[in-house]
Amino acid sequence: MFPQRSLFRLNQLRAGQQLASSPIRSAVQRRFASDVKLPAGVPDNAFNSERAAVKAHAAATKDLWRKLSIYIVIPSIVLASINAYNLWNEHWEHWAHMPPLEDRVEYPYQNIRNKNYQWGDGDKTTL
Image (cartoon, rainbow, N blue to C red):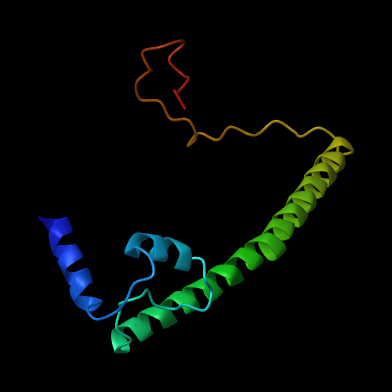
């Protein structure tokens, strides 16, 4: 029933007009035309004008974010990765020249065990 209603409405909209080709063929051919903003038979009212403006804004915004992603974000990530790699190597090169660290002092308030764990020697935690 739905296709019959839509065809009936389409015929009402185009009453009195001579169609050169079928509605399906004209819609397929005209969808690639850049100068047509609204499909044939759609009234040019405030709602459709606003919708077209939103579409144009969305296209411009999409293009802006695509350019930002390609030309700003990707090079920034590459430069930050190179910087992090260089800092990592400098850090370990610095540690290689330092004397070995002393053993840490065990204070009585550290590693308090009121009851042994049930695995291993009872002093090792799972973490």
